Length: 398
Image (cartoon, rainbow, N blue to C red; front, top):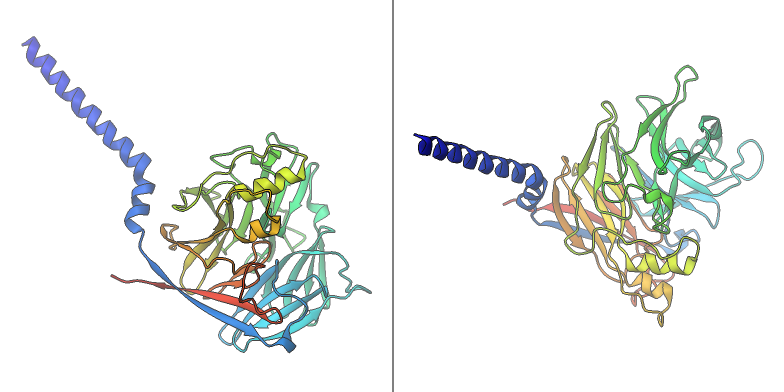
């Protein structure tokens, strides 16, 4: 009888162990299994667009851009730092016009523009490095000014940036809430933390914060151990705050209503998925080398027509002290990772080499991604023409 009980107990224990193991496999492996099952090829349709020489306004690529589209318009606005103007590219007719930013009078915008969001052709939001947001009309007249310094608490700093060597933290206008959303870096916390602040344009509603989850891989990334890659990338849709950290491959998606965050396993199959620490916090030559030798993950972009998401990232490159730094940077590989509407990883593509600038150069439009053709190693570069590729998605249906 005792042997039967012992055997029964062993049998129960065995089944319990098997059940627990299956549960653990299910819990820990679910995202990886989902990713592998859903991984299938998406074809890219790459259209090269050349703008006539007479239309080029001093610049071959734009580090800061924002798109607008409706039934009759498909426009891409880029900040031209050389002429201190907004260049407007008509994507249907491939023409360019400009909105000159005044440096005098009531409409003066005298400082470098760091953030841009086009609500409509006559409602353009700009952020400059005086920590002010301007609302402009179609001819550059300033209609409204919001001073974000009034919104900051002690130890806080506005995080709106478009430096692709560092981070791309976007500005966003929410029409439904009549509010502006932007990143904030909080130096008063330990470790340094990040949040999104929603500033309402109605004086009767107080600002609202959305705390951003720390990196699940490097929770203290803001402390300065990763050179230029110490701040998150931040982007928005109507309902979501999408952010990620340049040093690692996960994507973080916050629902603005619930403030709940989903962490997406978005590993690359072609590059490292975590950057190493930089050898120095002060020596900029070490920072430059660190940038070459490690991957760099860029912000997540929403593509409305295909109802998909896209992320670009750079692969690591072996550092060679005998080669020019710009040549090393320009020889790196650029990858495009695609996700469906539920952030299931669909495909990863290596984009053409020696073609694009990695310091400036891309933005989401309604039906794809615009990447400016500008690379010092491009033997076929058309030096007098503004050229860009429009990358559109074609999903294979089996």
